[in-house]
Image (cartoon, rainbow over all chains, first blue to last red; front, side, top):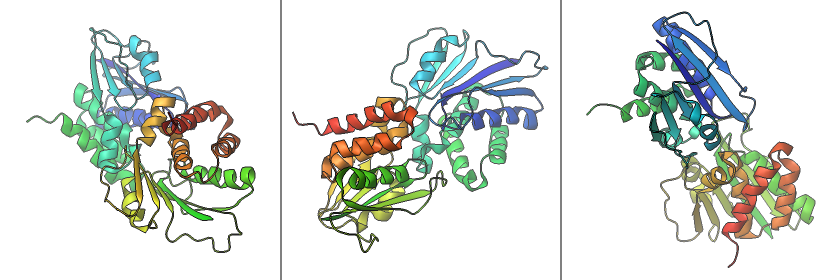
Length: 179
Length: 179
């Protein structure tokens, strides 16, 4: 099992941190192998941001992503740029606050969710949208356990924001709670 | 003429910069007197932020604001905290993305507008919401001329963001364009 994930949006949405959290959830809490790579640093506030994660049961010899299994798109630009690259049978997760035009693809699953608005509703601010997005991604794919994601998140976010981020993460999990 | 303005929300929405731009529009481009004061610095990303501006034709001897003439509220917390303080006959401008509950007041004007969503629509990102808000505020009040605001904005925002901020500002002006 090797899964390639791209988190894309703009600098300021916390996608680099999200990539680190997801990779650490896999490595520290589940003993898997993972790599994380960022195209642009968090200093590029407003610029395009792309965070790449590979999670695998095997050693990762080739840490490049050409066609991801999973794409999170947090801006229209990101979807327009990377939407076509997702593998057949893959998954695209879209934040409906930013993305109004979705080019249909019959060979991938596309989930459109108000990720940033869930953060605002739960915490009053959009800053936990990255954590909501991880909660959605993990719920849909099972790529790591929810408990692993939660532990990795609590370990990485600024301590003063733990409670709000936990509220945001659990709201994301609750979307997919069975009956 | 002395007008007291409070811009309130959270650190990261650019309200300190917005306060500086509005004060400079009055001072540099219209020869008025103005003061600008911030309660929390922009480093308080995610924390509460309050930016105070006084604009006057006369010398400003008392630079404190107790009851503003104009309040911009960019989070629910900000509206809940400062909404009651606005003077009778004053103006409250609300960002509907963040604020879902508005306590009615018959003695002030309340404008509810999708400020951040206008920024996203025009630029793909919410980062120009502060500039949209200024465009709305100036259009509604005429506290400075639109040209003065535009010049002050272009002088202050990072050069790489001038075009996008200008697009956002003009979209705000266009809301109030006659016929």
